[in-house]
Image (cartoon, rainbow, N blue to C red; front, side, top):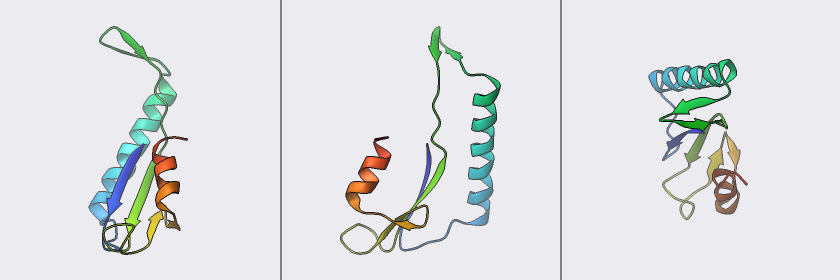
Length: 85
């Protein structure tokens, strides 16, 4: 999973968005082209969970709302998502 985290409601800047979308497309294309990768003699079958945005209204859950992909999320929900549950 690629994760961009913004605090104080900051938007993703254009150059960041461009870079993140390029990385997302390259990762997806790489996995589609080849399901198994040899990394130092170990076979890896990557599972990619995509590109996501976490935005804090201020700086923490205690001082403002938090959003995952622009949808409100609780601390427990975000912990579950980031734990791949």
